[in-house]
Image (cartoon, rainbow, N blue to C red):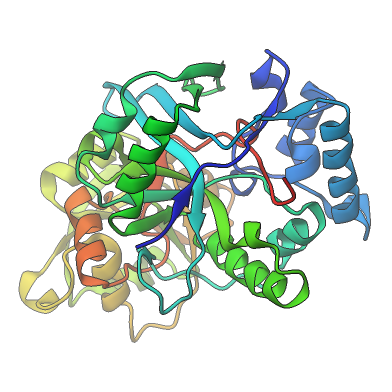
Length: 393
């Protein structure tokens, strides 16, 4: 089972934590990056999100910025290794008030054939080496991977408050709070609990793979033991600690071509003009929804006999049904974002799918069967900059 260790967390010294943090780098573009950078001269995007316009030395510049912030006490390291409780309070898509808690620590980096840290879906290839180049330059973990622990009762160990370090509310109304844990007996209990069962990677498969590459490089060049671990947020794999949304599909085929390709596997039913309310109707009808270029939908009800033996989740069944149809697919969360893509003609058709259930996620952990790429979208997103991990301290 994987080691899970406390570390000397780097934390912003300012009370205005909302102005210096950001969403994860991969959920916003360079325009939004500029907006975050303008909010505060020490916003984390200046380190975590180098842009090509900054030139070929952008990673070295990010590393120098991080070093300057540490030396000038913009960022201050804990005096001893700690864990960080991370609480989020939010209203989910169903309008319910929710509260979740996980713990940030350093999770062991294991080999692809190792045990204890498990992927939950196949990943799409990424040619860019951005995260690896940034890690090499900064020698730091700048944003946490999201892991799901199979340890029953982990949440109970995290309920008691720690020392509140920072609190902020993001633009979506999500309250993010970090609490420091330094009491040895509590650290030991959490370390043992997380390390006693496998951890399933929920978000950050590519960053975990980068951590493995970086670890291997360090074993050869420097023997830096800190690279044997990577910063990870771990929450228990239970319903009340997770909010899972769907990632919808965008296709380079027209709705008519898609219907022809899927006709042997799905019964089409007129759905009318698509809106955010369509998702509720999909749940009621137990189906997906094909959306044409005009935003008009067709429910796709699975034909059980045609999909016999295929895992009962929308992404898996859809992938199976399109096996023999040449196509290109892109991914987009949010119905309004999908409709915008259709209206702007950046895609020809789209299919709205339903979120994966917690039972299916647990089944993945138990069986080792991987979901298709981009099957899950865990929300709310963890905020970058609340906790950082230097590999040199």
